[in-house]
Image (cartoon, rainbow, N blue to C red; front, top):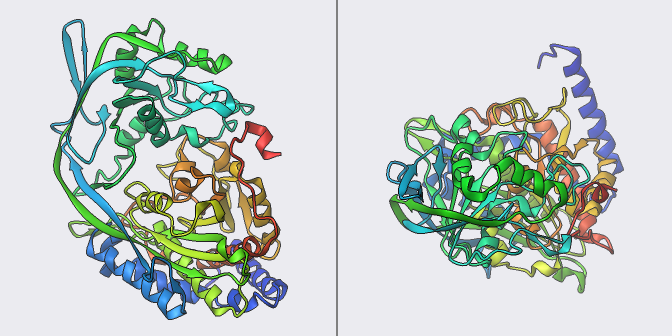
Length: 548
C-alpha cells in the first residue's frame, strides 16, 4: 500500500500502536476471544454478505434468505446454542404491500367543499386498504407523559376522531427542556404518538411538521431525497402481521397543515409558541373540519422472514438467567432492474460484526456470568420489524435483559451527504470516531463503554443524542427495546454519500476502525456480563440534567 500523505501514515501508526497496546492490556481470561477479531476475517465475511450474489438482501427475497442461512450456519459452526426453542430462526410473520400513490389521498371537507391531496404533499400507507372519514381534533404534539406532568390529550375527547398532531416534541431548541433538551426522547417518534392516539380512541392520525422548526420536515425530506426515487421498481412496504398498532397515519405538508388548522382560531406557529412557552395544552376541536384517509394498495400478501439468534449461556448459576443482547440487522434494499443496493455498511457491517462477536465469545474458554444473546434482526429497513417482533415475543425476559449493543453501520468514516446537509456539523476527521446513541436513557451504560475504551482508543461521540433534526434515536433496532425500558445503544459510524445507494460496497469499509469497534464491544459486553451492578435505565431523562 502506498502512503500518500501524512494523515495516512499517522492512521497506520496509530492503528498499530493501539492494537498492540490493546492486545497487551486486555485481561488474560478474555484475550483469546479478543484476538479472533481480525480485519481480514471481517473483510472476507463482508465481501460475501454485500456481494452481487445476495442481490441486496431485500426482506422476503432469496438474497436475504441466503444471509439468514449463512448467519445460522456460522452460529452452528461456532458451537453456540440455538436461541429459539432448538432453532436459530425466529419466524417473523409479515404483510408485504405496495401503496398505490395514484389512488391514495388525504381529503379535507369544510363548508360544503372537499379537497384531495396526494403524494408527495400528503402520504401514508397501511397494510390493508383504508377508508376513514371523521371529525378532526388538534392534539398538540400528541404526547401523554405523566412522569413529566405533560398531556396533550387533557381536556379533549379524541374518541372516534382523527387527531392532528405536531411532529417531534415541545421546546426542541431549548437545552433545558424536560424532553431531553435539544435531543429526542421516546415520545418524539410517530409510532409512539400513533399508539397514544389509538389508546385515546382516535381512528387515524395526521402528522404535521412543527411550524417553527429549524430543520426539514419528514415530508420535505421525502420530497427532496425521494427515498428510492431512482429505482425502476419501487420498494414494497412491510408490516408485522400481529402489530398492536392498527391506527393509520398520514403526513402532510405545511400548506395542507395550515388549511386543516385554519378553524382552530390560532395560527399554527402561535399554537406551537404557546405550548413551548409553558408546556400547557393547546389542544382543541377543529370546527367544520372532516378529514378523510383513503389508501389503496397495488397488492398485499403475507410472508415470513426470520430473526437469527444464538445463545452463549452464562457461567454463573444465578446470573445466567440475565441477558446481554448483541445485535444487528441482515436486510437491505435489494435490487431494481440491473442495479443492486449492496448494503455493505448498512448493514452488512452490523451483521458481520454480530457474527464475529459470537465467534469471539464462543472461542473464549471463560464465559461471562450473564448469558449473551446474539441476534441479527429481520426487516429493519422496512420499519424495525424484526426488533419490534422480538421485543413483543422475547425469547428471554426483557425484565432481566441488562443491556443491548446494537450495530447498524459500523464500517465507514462519516462524511457529508444529502442526509445531513445543512442539518448537522460533521467533524473534520472521523477515521477513528464512533457515535453512541441512547445515553440519555442510560448514562451508566455510556460510562462502561468509556471505561473499556481506554484499552481501545476510539474517539467516542454523543452528538446525535443532542440533535433532533435527523430523528436518529428512532432509526435502528435498539429503539423497540428502549420502549421496554432496556438500556440499549446504537453503535454507529455515521452517514456518508453511499448511504442507501448502490455504491455502498465492501471495498469502501474502514476495516481497521470496524475491528476496533468490535473489540470495544467485546470488552464492553464482558463488563456488562460480569459486573455486579448492570447499567440502570433512566425512564425520564430531563434535558441537561440527564447528562450530568
